Amino acid sequence: MNIADIHGNAKPIPEIGEILSSADLILLSGDITHFGGEKEASQIIDLIRNYNSNILAVTGNCDTKEVDSYLESENIQIHGRHVKINGVSVLGAGGSLPCPSPTPNIYTENEYVEIFDSSTQNLDNRRPKILVSHQPPINTLNDTISTGAHVGSVTVREFIEKLKPLVCFTGHIHEAQGIDEIGITKIVNPGPLGTRSYAYMEISDKIDTLEIRKI
Image (cartoon, rainbow, N blue to C red):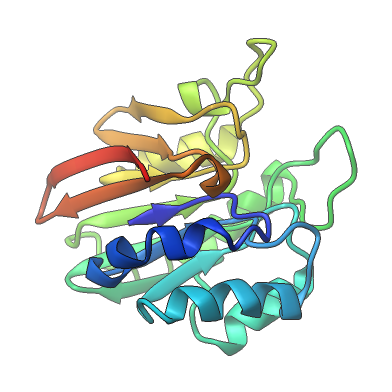
């Protein structure tokens, strides 16, 4: 299952405790905290671990670099790397492009090229792949802000078009909840956890079930 944009709000987590417990893997697609550091991140991660310890995560633009270091120390960080689990390769990219208001964890398009180059080193392309990217790709439902403008990343989109993962779990744009697609890849923004929503997926060598569910 996938959770996005927690922003330090732990209240909904016990409400999905039974769902967390039954999942094979919990994917967090960024903004675990709201401008917090290790202490705030550990409170969220430890609470999730009360139900399920199988967690992989990236940071968001509202997480400080201290959160990246914490995820690294807990061996759940997938920013700029991939992890093989249950026959699937899970790749990650945290942070976001620069925002109108300053946030602590941003990257340029060129830096995202480097992040994705790093994440695909020694990648077995025969395995099904999942991408977790806080920054959504451009020109999708999932990067559309309230004005109708698209604020996604060209680099993220080009990477998806090249890699062709089964799914890209994203977040960042709170109002852009939904499921879209780029080629064969499903693009999923479950919406902030504070809206009591999450993404649920079952896969084999293909997607068997993919839904955004409400608590």
